[in-house]
Amino acid sequence: MKLLDIFGKKDVGEELIKKVPYGMRLNFHPYRLNANKMESVLMIIELKNLKEEVLLTSVIVQLPKSLGFDQTALSNAREIRLGEIKPGEEKVIKVEVWGNPRTDAGDYPIQVTAICHYRNYGYMLNAEKKEIVLRAV
Image 1 (cartoon, rainbow, N blue to C red):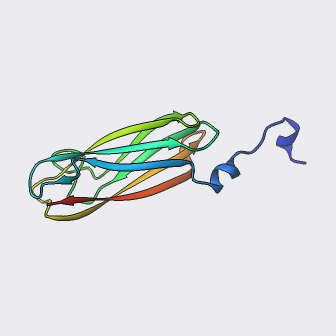
Image 2 (tube, rainbow, N blue to C red):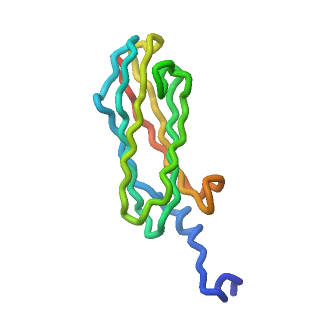
Image 3 (tube, rainbow, N blue to C red):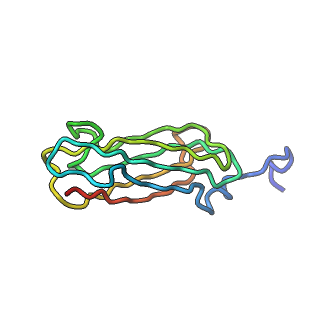
C-alpha cells in the first residue's frame, strides 16, 4: 500500500508517459517559399489533447540556420507556451517563417516539439516531435 493510496490520490504520471498525449498536424500557407528573397510563409500547427486530463503544454519550433522567425533570420528557435489544454480541446498556433537572401533553393526541415509539463514549465513529463519540410524554389 502506497502513501498516496491512503489519501485517495492516484499517480497519473505513468499513464501519461506510456501513450502519445497529443495529435499534431503541420502545414504551410503558401506551401513553398521563394528562394533568395525576403518573403515569409505561415506555418500552422494544430495541436489536440488526446488524454483525459488537463495538460500544461508548450511548443518548441526549431528552424535551420538560413530561415528565421523575423526578416533578419537571427532567431532559429522559439518556445510558445500554450497554458492548460482541456481533454479533447484543439489549439491552433500560427508561426511566421521568413526566408532571406541566404535562403537557397532546396528543402529545409523544420522540427516541432509539443511538450507536456507538470507543476510548471520547468518540469517535462512527455513530448512528441514531428518534422515537416519547407521547400524553397
